[in-house]
Length: 119
Image 1 (cartoon, one colour):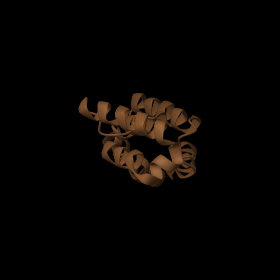
Image 2 (image 1 turned 90 degrees about the vertical axis):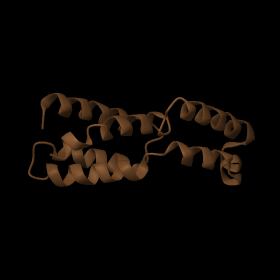
Image 3 (image 1 turned 60 degrees about the vertical axis):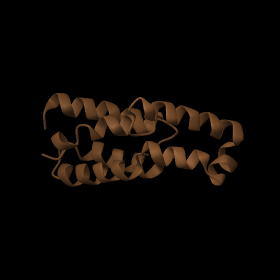
């Protein structure tokens, strides 16, 4: 793997792991990948990490549906849910494909390098 790509993904992985919005499964996959870099397990852990990120990243339409749902409103509160819905629709209209929370932003940055990681 190209050193620049490895350094970039490593940096984004540390960012991902440091944010509260990162789920425990993604943190575990990130740690396993970091531990495997440079070992015979790297390819297997890279695939697992990519699969986890793809499962966890929140598409913008899913975010909008969640924050506009009864469950989203109950969980976040009416004002926060409405604010998030407005924000999500705004970033969607600007071309966003995914949620822009720090975890999803880091995951998207890593997934942009997916093809280079899986070589």
